[in-house]
Length: 173
Image: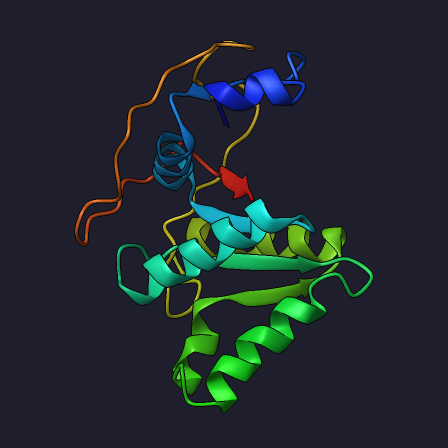
């Protein structure tokens, strides 16, 4: 999901299975929120930090209860972990804040964790306190055709409501 203005700045990867173009950044975030059953942050820059902190904040505000994973590749997430721990140790956040997110070591571990969340839901078990609602997906999943371009409008998440996205989708922030 990419906002229209960034298609002019960045190369919008036209070879993706599905490319969604939103009107703006708010529409991008809204769309990612709606279509994701879980959130996975890979190493990135300021935009990634903005998005992962926002989605953790939304979870704290109970706007969703979807799993939030932060993938640590070669120590890339250690500064974020230190910052989150500092907010807790300095009393700006409660120790329970740690339950809002999970750090995983590397991409294989992140994929394994997402798979475990899906298996837990398939087996009828909960995934822990979040009860994520992840469902399995596989070949033949219905949905948009490759390279469909869609538009999204300026919105923010609804108060206390969560729409579940397409089966098994996790957003990469």
